[in-house]
Length: 157
Ligand code: MG
Image (cartoon, rainbow, N blue to C red; front, side):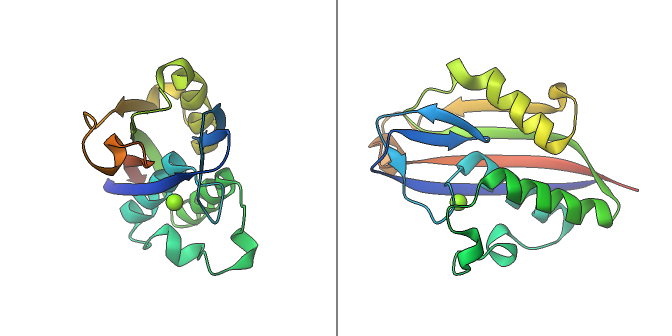
């Protein structure tokens, strides 16, 4: 078994939706990002890569590379999963946490959970999705952006 963790932040910017777990969620702001700025999937990719000892998302999909401009983050997850499979790893479970004052996760929780499980090709019970605010403290509390944490467990062989 291998465990990995990931963390990602994006600042809010102009726009009317954010991408969370590959799902478009309506919001009064968008995010500033080279790709689609999906914090949940970026943290998930880093956790997957971390568990496999394969570095981080910036190493494999550098934001200096025009190929990834505006990229849909599900593509990153699929590509990372292929790297893991070729090395004999499979996903046991993933636990994701969204840190933000808004948008609220609750109305979208099951949709996003389903989407992440489909991306990881695991039963939905193996994906957990949590959310917390930071009690209005710090940059997240001031609604300057949003962040996500991910922990995954991989099985070998
Ligand atoms: Mg990111």
